[in-house]
Length: 267
DNA sequence: ATGGTCGGTATCCGA
Image (cartoon, rainbow, N blue to C red):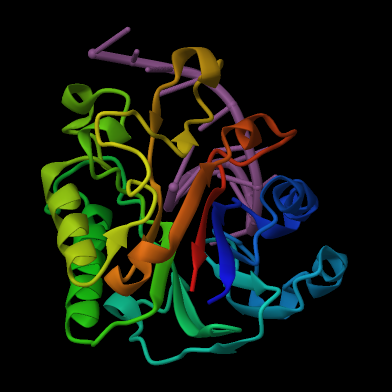
């Protein structure tokens, strides 16, 4: 058994905000940092700027301008490269690794699910269809595998529970909280995972990880959504120790609109 | 009901 802290953060441009990772490390002390929306091609990955942070083991999959995911680790890891190219788009939304922890290997998946555009209708808005297809494909892929000692994190761009949004009724028609999305995400999770953050926080309690840049005073209005998730396979559930949603990060200078989410577990 | 703000391939597009 060994303690493992896994953090996930949609950083919204790794090169622009690489300096903020110091604050994340100071606040959370994670063993592993999973990033989304890195927006950097692999050849331009800022390895030098990251070197002093102390996470020598990295895997990343990036492209110019959009998307992009990365895993930074204190724990040795190997690229886990068996997953398909989701929806055949080659758009750098998933990277996975096997962590070599003292307690044994842990499989880690880092996802950036499509945001899905504005109109919740796949005939009018292909991005919405892509989002639903992506989560259905992911559900099928995980359902077909035998999972153990696995962790899935990322910006899943869906707030599944009523109290994962500031107003369930007002957001039922808003992409990120529509029934096809929340049902699809729950089906994916039920293919082999439990929600490691809600393990600690009852469903009656509001919980958000994202506040729009368009909210001038995000803390006062608090119109948030929980879009960022940490899931674990049931064999790891008894080892869960704590969760942290780092709300203060929303006020970091030139911060992301998402805040880091971290789970500590014995593995 | 509207519009509000970010980042990057930047005077639009995606979020």
